[in-house]
Amino acid sequence: MKRALVTGGSGDLGGAISKALSAAGIHVYVHANSNLEQAEKLVSSIQQQGGSAEAIQFDVRDQAATQSALEKVLEQGPIQILINNAGLHNDAVMAGMTPEQWHDVIDVNLNGFYNVTQPLLLPMIRTRWGRIINIASIAGITGNRGQANYAAAKAGLIGATKSMSLEMSSRGITTNVVAPGIIEGAMTEGVFDKNTIKQVVPMQRAGTPDEVAALVAFLSSDESAYITGQVININGGMA
Image 1 (cartoon, helix red, strand yellow):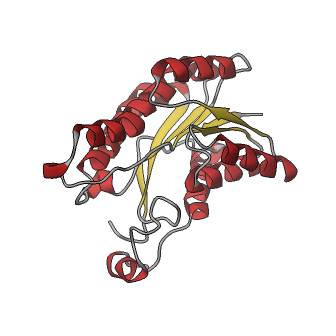
Image 2 (cartoon, one colour):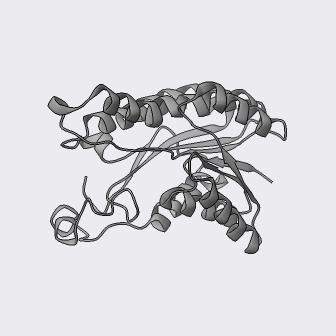
């Protein structure tokens, strides 16, 4: 059984991805930082439906804590599917953005990606099979007012993905970006009203976590073996 790690697995999108991967017969580590209880509830739900999962807790910003947690996971075998989904936004126009706002968003979305990914690569390489899917955002492609920090982090994630694809493809490991637009859930609730969504999204609705999860599950499968280094938008036609 292949083993997957979904960072930010306790959130709306991470939860949907965890469920989709478990439905495909993959053992899923559902990661949480502060919301371990929600991750454990999700694991229980997956297990009740016949899937295989367990919860794991660490702060992706803390390199040492992340390393320690991942070493325990790797004692059981390599992670072959990695979904870098953990993220946050802390919005302000650049002229009014505090150093804390800048560093907080960069630390989770970009430095956290490094802290999680780097320790898992050599064990993954030894298996000659792997899937790395990094969850970015339309903001990392087009930019967005009030989100210079978030857009910079997600754009950095895209650049790192393309570089890793060049490094990892010959080892049977694909590395791709999924870039959602407006997706239903806690991160967008209260940010976009229905009228705004109709104006900015050609499909005139928000996407669902399950729609993103279906794409991630495909990119995690054997069938996606010739897709790597790509940025795949899922945004209802916004870009």
